[in-house]
Length: 156
Image (cartoon, rainbow, N blue to C red):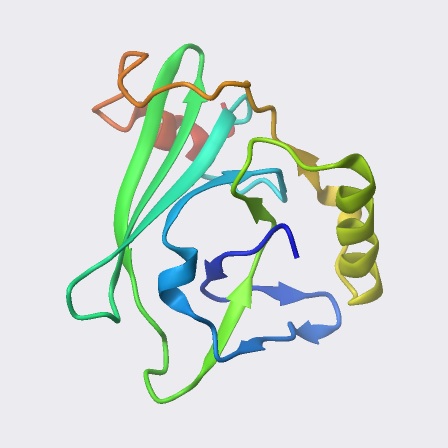
């Protein structure tokens, strides 16, 4: 499958999502580009070039996460850490991300149809604009005060 990355908890309209077992976490480290998403209240509404970069820490179980998006010419980002909710489990949950800035339209449509068949409301899905080539992290001023996050709380 062209698009996959680890995610925390997500639910579909019919209940819990299907999970992947035995995920090779190291394989999914690196940069992933958002192809489409159901916009979250905390994301800029005009965000583009949205991507996530994952780096495995030395313990082999903790992942450093850098989420970036560009809005009004500025780079917005948030950093965090991810880990398995249940270390004893071999389950992983997935979302639509890709190693490239775009995927074949037919593949995209197949993924959306599969999500529909699984019970997800794909009418809320929004294609994420991606530039090719993608911007470098330091190619734009950075919103160091998190203003985008506060504005998003109020829907602006």
